[in-house]
Image 1 (cartoon, helix red, strand yellow):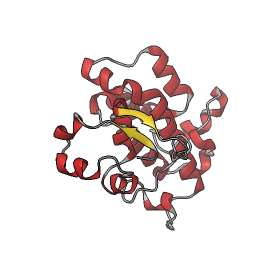
Image 2: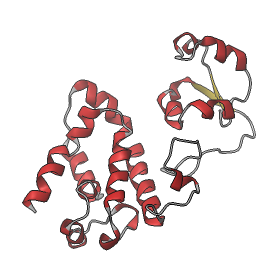
Image 3: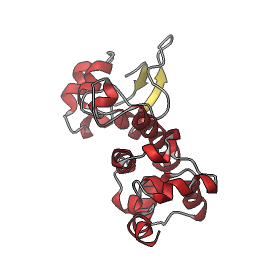
Length: 198
C-alpha cells in the first residue's frame, strides 16, 4: 500500500472482511483496493505490520495533517468541491489541528485511556499554548485575548474570521482519536465552564 510492504499473514485470520480477500491480493499493489474501504488511520494503527518499502516507490503521503483524497473520509470541501461554509482558513485550521493530534495525542491516546491517566501538566500546557483549548470554546472574546498571551489560533486564523465551522473541525479532529475518556480529559470541563466564566 503506497509503496510500503506489510506482512499480514498472521493478521489475515483476524481481518474483519475475512482472510480470503487478503489472500486474493497477496503480493500485489493493493493501494486502490485498500483505500476504497479503509482510511489512512488503519495503516497508522497497524504500522507494526510494515516490513519494508519497495525500491523506487514514490512517497504517497502528503504533508502532516493534510486532508486525504479518499471519498467520504473527508468533508467534500477539502477534496475540491465547492462549499459556502468552508474556505481556506478552515483548511489551514484543519491541517494544523490534525498535525497536532497526530504528533502529540495519537501516540499516547490508547495507553492513557486504558490506564485511566489524566494528561500531565506538560501536555495541558501544550494544549493551551498551541491554542487547542481556546478554539474548542467556539467564537468569542477569548480568541482576541489570545494574542496578548502570545498564543495564535492554529492555522493562522484571525479571531474575527473564526466561526463555528472552525470549532466543529477542531472537535472532529480530536474525535478521530476514538477514545472518549481521553478526549474528555483534554478539556471537556474547561470547554463547558470557561465561556460562562469569561
